[in-house]
Length: 295
Ligand SMILES: Nc1nc2c(ncn2[C@@H]2O[C@H](COP(=O)(O)OP(=O)(O)OP(=O)(O)O)[C@@H](O)[C@H]2O)c(=O)[nH]1
Ligand SMILES: [Mg+2]
Ligand SMILES: [Zn+2]
Image 1 (tube, protein in one colour):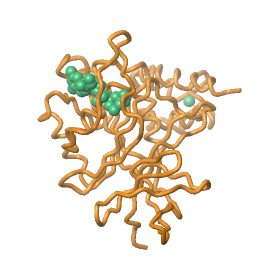
Image 2 (cartoon, protein in one colour):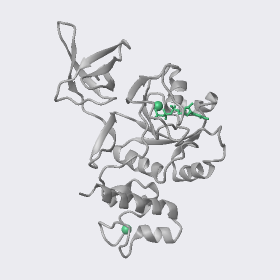
Image 3 (cartoon, helix red, strand yellow):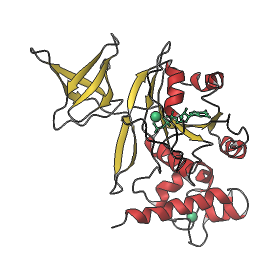
Image 4 (cartoon, helix red, strand yellow):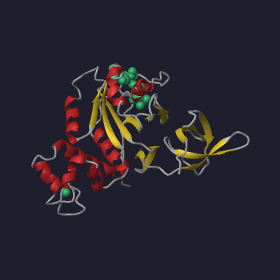
């Protein structure tokens, strides 16, 4: 099957913006009630005599990225993604466990995570230890500043031929980095609130762009304040902790939650220094936070 040349750039209440990958033209297609496309979907279109266009079918998704909705169910944000670029910044400072939650989600969605530490111009040392920690775990990391565009080049070099999405808190600089990568000054960015130091939720729609001079796509998404994981079991969360992997399957109980059971290989690994205590504590907090979804 030849892949559909139509890809969803963004969705709105009653229609979606579509890019024709052959011609680079954009068009607007109506939505049927039964089709719920998301940014990044490949679709087939019905074109009518009166020149209107409708999405006929969403092609099967390779994967999707999601977050929890109010009921703890996954809410799909975008589809067919290779790379999750998790952006954190010196200001607003990431909340506790934010990076680990994004890493668990990336693992479950089958998307390669990249960590970007932005706004190094404000404090070059702020993330040194955190960056070293995640590098040691095996993740690709980038320390950079959107105020110094040359520092963005190494990140840009990894985006060719892929679909990547910027995720992270509001105000960390996702759109500022997108502007540099896309060479597009029309993307809106906005200052942090002076009162709270938080981002002002400037980007309101998840949107796909074609990379200039390269075969690839970049998705800029609206920032969140707290990224919530949908309902997951302790075992599913543990699987998203890469440093737990060598020990999984070695606990006394198959369904060990690694919280309190006897003969737990994960807790032993923490005691013997093979797993960092702060990663284990983060794991326990994330498992605990799932109670929030219980009704
Ligand atoms: N000092 C400094 N400021 C930056 C940097 N990157 C972004 N900013 C500023 O941070 C503010 C927020 O940037 P945005 O790019 O709008 O942030 P965002 O992540 O897209 O925010 P949302 O769209 O709300 O999710 C703006 O005032 C930017 O100019 C950086 O590397 N250094
Ligand atoms: Mg933005
Ligand atoms: Zn265990």
